[in-house]
Image 1 (tube, rainbow, N blue to C red):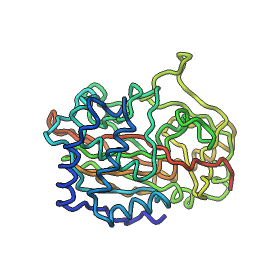
Image 2 (image 1 turned 90 degrees about the vertical axis):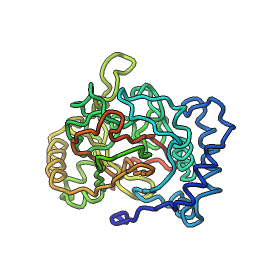
Image 3 (image 1 turned 120 degrees about the vertical axis):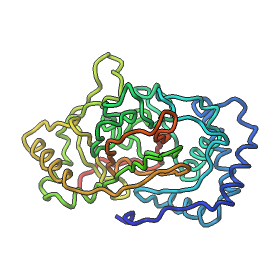
Image 4 (image 1 turned 60 degrees about the vertical axis):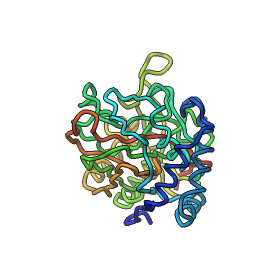
Length: 329
């Protein structure tokens, strides 16, 4: 895993100022917001990033596009021209967030990724406001904060196969733009290959077999049938086309369908509980992206700052051109 110790790419103040001015002057969007005209945000965001980011930063993004690492972090990007309070109900006026949206979607375009939303969660919107919501304080969702979010990958209920419809498949990437994080709450990351290296070979082999059932997390609404979403006969681990191992996992969401699968899951959870994570702090003006199939993540409980000033990250799922392969090792 080459990402351990990877530095954060810091945008210079002069580049940030020039980019902020250019994005504030964009007139081609009209009243469009990302959910109605995402292609415009991708196009114009990428255009101005190309024009104003330093050449070494653009080179790094280009290299990542062709050889993606498991995660990537940028800092000191421009946010809104005027302060916007942290939303208390999970949603906000997207018209106030044109600059961060252009930055967020522009970077995704430069990385060769396509934004994706799921109709089962977040009201089908592209951007999820990862922010404390009092009514959801103890829920195991991105709006909760009083309970720990243990090691997991997002949307494990969805299809891992390479030919699956994007709208039905596990998101390849989670991307974040930092609005504020004065509580300095990190996102811990744990590479999948680190976990597999700590397991016996027989346990790893069992995780590759399609002998598991998976259920949807709290953030999902019911399926079209009105019943909770579930999927049977899937592997926990599979191999991506680039040779890296991929994983689906969420505490309490996976169950083994055979004695060998149940034993492998129990051993997996024992090992994961003892492994440390790598903390990544997404602060105001930060962009962070990681491969949801190659990395687990978690978040500790925290006490939010005052109303309107609490931790606020903007999350968008994204897919790349290369999907996973279902082959076993």
